[in-house]
Length: 338
Image 1 (cartoon, rainbow, N blue to C red):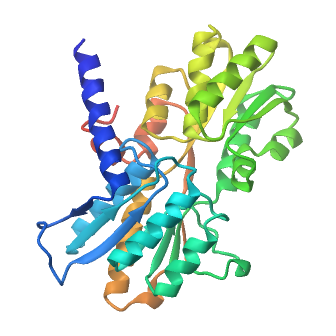
Image 2 (image 1 turned 180 degrees about the horizontal axis):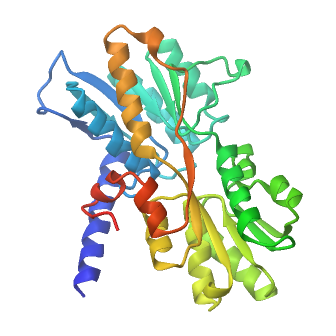
């Protein structure tokens, strides 16, 4: 009962933070009164939960800004859903209207937010893109000061190589994509898996949503009993598959893999319900962003790297968690490393 109360309290806190971020509350260090020396930074992820990728990035960004002694105000806003591209563009226009010194943005859609990038550039506000490390192609007509993230194709390669090393040729694999986008395909690494002799027997677009992944997995498991591996190309799709496999009573018979290794996935790996997930350290990404903002403030723009790629590793055990996971992943929600 006590555990349930703690979970309910945590859920309420997360909901409150999310509600505040949607309505556009500004969070400031050092008081709420106007300060002409305070740097105003807009933090614009497509969604926010403290225990997920964007919440962990936020932890790194804040800790980095604090450690560098920057006097700042953080304006955090998210669309109501992670795929509301129109609302994120409106948020960009809004924060530009109120006035900000920097924008730190993870777009709802890398290609789909070109208008937002161009709008930011037109206002002359330095833009940092995170969760992606591919510079905008020339046809976007926009630039960013730095791209802080990782290559999504590298995540797919890490997973494909892990499967090759740990499963026999001919293993039957189901893939739960996000949406029909290049990033989704890169994370799945279907071509690599087939080159390694694996058989892709099921593919479904779950729109990055756990409930859609759950429904698809139930249909999959109802229709065939020979699937060896399920790949969720995002954390939520993987966890939807885990829940479906558990409800169908086959969790011990199927290997399920996720992407990103957020706290929920790490807990599932510890419990043995998720086989593994590749990890990209969002805390370090946030800290690097803070460092680049500081460099820009000091007039050292030429020293800011155009691209920063965080290393990717496979997490499949408590030992791997202890070796590779940033402790802030657990500490940010009041927990200790396992």
